[in-house]
Length: 139
Image (tube, rainbow, N blue to C red; front, side, top):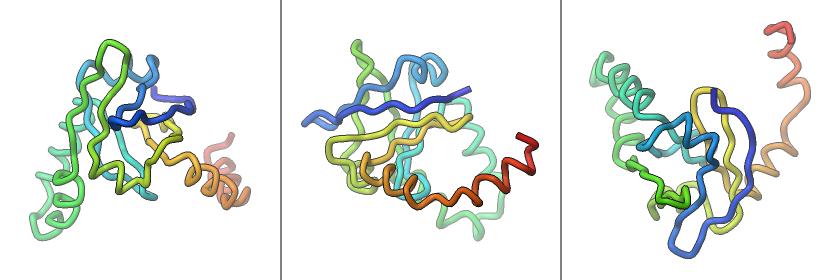
């Protein structure tokens, strides 16, 4: 399971270190695409393939927009020996990534946030938003 929160910097070439724990779970090749809240979503090859199958099983008229949104911006990521991956310019611009980033495990996927956007998201998060779901999950 992909869990945890890591703060890193993007280097001038657009590379960021993917935490070792995430690389172990994601495998040697994984995929990046546009995510919710102007983030980058990272999926393992198995999860990426499963997403493709789910979309393919739906009517094309229903999936044309999400297909364009997800697949036109997607990139295959292969970490180098230092664990760095190159985040394509298009995805960096979409997520507003400049220097400071936060890399979050969210169970089945990883999200990359701009550091300031992550702070703002957390500052605007209402306790009630979380507590209602926690109660439903009996946590």
